[in-house]
Amino acid sequence: MIEAVDVTRTYDLEGVSVPALRGVSLNIAAGDYVAIIGPSGSGKSTLMHLLGALDRPSAGKLLIDGQDVSDKTAPEMAKLRNETIGFVFQAFHLLPRTTALDNVALPLVYRGIATRERRAKAQQTLERVGLGHRTGHRPNQMSGGEQQRVAIARALVTEPKVLLADEPTGNLDTKTGQAVLELLEELNRDGVALVIVTHDLEVASRATRKITMRDGEIVA
Amino acid sequence: MRMAEAWRVAMDALRANRMRSLLTMLGMVIGVAAVVVLVALGTGTKNTVEAQVEGLGSNLLIVVPGQVSLGAAPTVSRMDNSDLEAVVKIAGDRERVTANLASGEIVRAGNASTFTTINGVMETTPKVFLRDIKSGSYFTRTDVDTGRRVAVLGAKVARELFGERDAVGQQVTVAGVRFRVVGVFEPLGQSLGIDRDNEVHMPITTAQRLFGTGRVDAFAVKAPDRETIAALGDELIAELSRRHPDTEFSAVTQEQILGVLGDILGILTTVLAAIAGISLLVGGVGVSNIMLVSVRERTREIGLRKAVGARPRDIGIQFLLEAVLLTTVGGVVGIALGIGAAVLTSALTPVPSAVTAWSIALAFGVSAAVGIIFGVVPAQRAGRLDPVVALRSD
Image 1 (cartoon, rainbow over the protein chains, first blue to last red):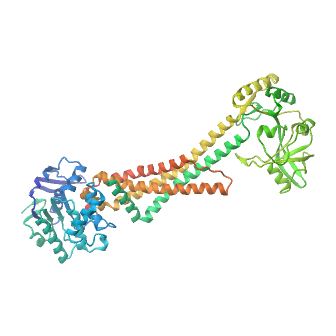
Image 2 (spheres, helix red, strand yellow; image 1 turned 45 degrees about the vertical axis):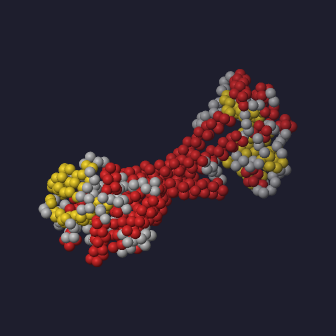
């Protein structure tokens, strides 16, 4: 599904190159449940951006869904993200003033799907995450847990192969976080690969595979 | 498909910042309204002046000594009544010819007085120049032949001297000589800042005696049709030059006057539109500014949209549409306001205005263009944002 071989990512900060990833190799197969942990600055966010086709490696080889990202243009990367990856963020990143239904339908807009079909699909997906009754609500009318479920539905609506969750429980209380995590795991059991980036060891311990990062390298 | 979404998002974004959107639009509204109003006033003035010149009468030829040019002093005429006979002979019909001897004088009636232009002319003048009499009548051929002391007053002169009373039958005095008022002209209004109602007509023979001269300043001849004007002009100049070898003569047609005036007023309209265009430019800069703010504010939204599959182009179009929406909605309001102001101006003031389809089309086109031109930089900036950076921003 995603294959990284000796991937390096270096940022250029005012003429000084700062390495964020130094030679990371990693394989995520269909249906995997992987947790990436490590202290802040360890490169786990950079790794997630690369795995999610938001960014390209400075060196090394990165295959997403069998496609080499190194020579892809920005529009091609956008298409790859839209078709393969579902993102779940710590801060939900829902569009304000937009209903749950339209938030969920957003990725389908960029796939060029007609409004009616888009909304039907979004409705189904919201029901799947247990929010079939909240479709007309806007983010500010929902609790944090509900907002994260909407975000998960948005990630899911395109039927991605991989769900990338960056601290998905970070803005939620323990109980709500637990429920969100269980939802993600349930989706994972249905077949989608799940990659969770976290510094919460308890969250990480539930994954079938744990990748620990430090100073831009995988240490365990 | 994606366009529909882009429209929805653009509308939504403008609505979310209602005050800011309105103020930005206001810049466009003022600019577009200014263009529409100023072009309408310029065009209205041009139309009115052209109508007035045309209203002088068609196929008109004016023959004067010297050259007709701005800045040159008029040549003193050496023409007299014998030239008049020659001109009538060439024109073939006395009805088509009038002559003129003009002087600025004070006219008095009782205690009232006013400064005006005395035109010594022939009884044919109302036919040659298409002038209407409001009350009384014009003087007759007999009045001209016998040099009677009769006068026809312009509407303004009649008003200044007699107020609301009927001037016909009253006496006026010019240079100490008394005249009987036989008629009053219909008002003509102003053109090019000249009050065309401030004049007194009297028989040219009477005027010659009054001013102690046998002079004729100019002739006006009405050609039978358009085709013969030029030939007639040449013939008249040839004959007059033969009679006065030391004088140069010019024949000016109405079309020539119209052409020069039209050019001047056309340039005036363009200049007015250009000045108003500057305010459009300022409005455009305002749009650009607000769009840059909007892009910055919505960086995270841009990042999210990119994460779920928006291409740089999708984001760019969304912001470009937002800018174009701002300017075109502002443009439409500005056009409405401009038309309203133009209509109101011509209703409440003597300044004429004519709203033309082209100025509206231009104003709309320019406002859309302003949106595109001033929206493109912010839109490109939004489209090129790195999704990683955009998502991380707060």
